[in-house]
Image (tube, rainbow, N blue to C red; front, side):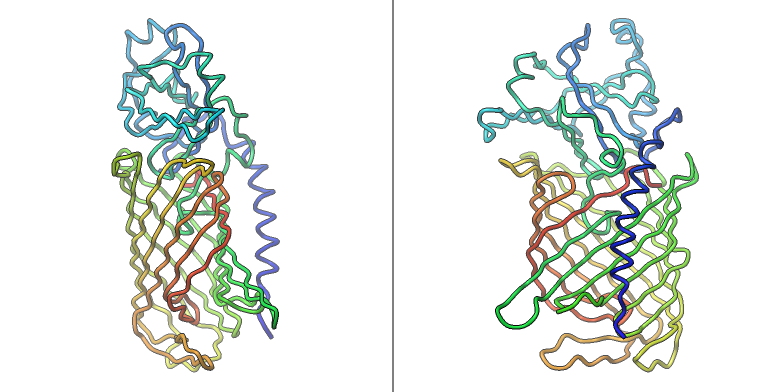
Length: 425
């Protein structure tokens, strides 16, 4: 009987939205923000007060870079402004776009000369100091968008309604590996026969365990490749833990562990496994012309045991070593497109025991067992309409557990939704 976990997955997705929306209203408290190497900008405005007149004030959500959290006060600026102001910090990680309301193709891009923390870290506010201040007339005639050009590249529009609830809880994600909510789907119809579906999705929710405790939660993935029904080729689910260790500006390790997890497919294959990975995160690199690139590498393991399988196995044990690399290129707004993204990832699994492998073939699928390494390559060119939704051209080659059904050079065009919890870890 086909495995119908997709019905559970979609119900779980709705539940996650409801729970996380409620949680988002209570996450921001009196505690100092922690740096999770992922950020959301919740509000931006132009100050009209004293020495700050014409400068842009930006509010972070629950996560804020340690560079700003630990910035020392500047006594002279504090006395002049009448409230605590930090020393000036480099502004090269920020980009301000001034878009003419009457001619949206006219975009003026500005890098602030310095950044100062306003008030204490509890306020989560920074001031972007500009050589040419924003006058009331400019604020009226132009749409001003602010980008933080590192980590997950969050952005905010000046004078837009402050982000609250789910809008503040979820931030922009770079790709599936980076996301907590992800859905990419295509449907191909024809005059004869049923439509074909391709779905790649992920849902996760994490509860913050405090300043140094990391986050605990659950995650699941669901993949259907070019099928006439929604029976999955790969499903994973597990209880998960995440912890971020920050070493410097936009630099650190992200530890992810599925303490207990499951792998399923439509052929009644069932695996029980534990997973742990360590991901190295480094700052983005400016390529010139307001283009930025970032990359990370990860390594880990998957161990467990096969519970049921339609393919005979000599050893039910699962022992895999993982290595992966991810890259991401960002090009800020182009006309009505909010951001253009190019993402790519490569994952290899080295197997310690023979596991099923279903090779791509034009005839009937044949599954064998082998301990050959398994690769998965993903690439996407995405035009994002907002921080969550975009149109994507994707490439897929390789296989995923549990049956490692091979997909060979598959290209898809469809819509993508991707978001991440900015406070996780």
